[in-house]
Image (cartoon, rainbow, N blue to C red):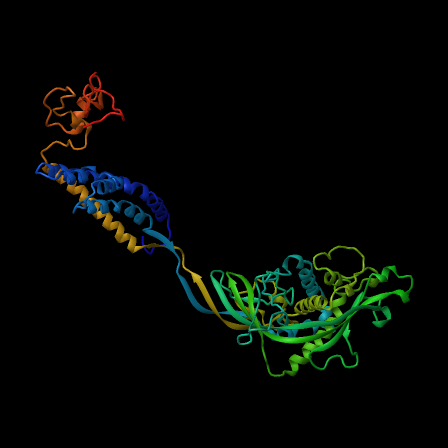
Length: 553
């Protein structure tokens, strides 16, 4: 069974082995005790020292062997070996118990995983107004699903579809860096992620662990101020309740970081007596755009980010211009995602996005109230706005890969067409490949511990030799086994009248014949000044009771 996988037969065998610490000592005591007794009887027929005979006959257990070894107060060539032999009893039982165990073998192999390439955003719906209007039902569903489920998935390493989320690089400590890697602290179990939507990953092994790296892009938002100002500071029309826009409308963004402002109607919108008394939230922030590399570890299909670092890349005009273009297009569509084309939207309270920024844990429901975002610190507002912007942005590209059920043939998600002559073109979607280290464990197999196996074989062999030796010596011995039996004290005992004869009987046979006889250990010289102790008949009236106040010879 050594080296074989766990099986029902093996399970039954292990259950039997569990009995070995109980069974082995019992069998050992029975066979080894009879062997020592047979040796003693055989040698007594030929002449033997009484001390040696006492050790052989009385050595019926480990404690008895130790008792005689210590009590005789003399080392002998046979006393120590007899005592040591009895230590084989617990050794054999424990050896059998530890003989077999199960183990798994860890195997490491190399493989590949696929992930949506960082530049997949170049085919975003945010390329233009026509694309955004055509895909409104798609990105609105994805974005609001992520937002409304954030109570459960906001702090999880994977989104609700099983895509791997990436923390914001700037939120990680930049001290003690090794090759630029920033470690993600897991001790608090409260990692912040840059988006509620993760990066789609394909070809992850469902068993074992997988480690790999991938690259992705993310917007980085930091707010420098957040306060309550007069409503006239920012133009918020009745079609929305909040706005995002460039700080300088004439030159929106020429490089990173890009200055922006946030304006949001607050609680004064419903309580002010006049327009002049109306206030709004006004925040100034800057937006960066980063390409990051993230180290991922997966246990089965459950993955998480372990560390991140910034990736330097040559300046790419297309990437930079599209990132800026899509950022400001998202500012135009994000504030009205959940109230687009609603009459008097500005009079129906803050949007879900604003309420989420105010309190991500309590924002769902038709409350028709306005939230005061100016009460948030600039850091908190920037962090939550960053999550909103990245989530909305990611809901507009690679949407066919977000469901988490990616096909084995990823080329089917690339630029394709359907529909005969009037074919409809789908956005290009390509995957990058990353080398992965796969670690998995083999099925449980039985493994024999050969050291304990040798110990068990030695103990069992000695026990078998003892059993055979006892049988042979008993056959070779003519003397009856009277050693160690109470009935042996009745031989020629003047204080215990029994029928004569029976010298050929063993101790047990003689006891069986005298089983009705009552015996007593007492003082056979009770009438003398000094007593004598012997075994005699209990019916003998001259056999006195022993007393601590009396002298005995």
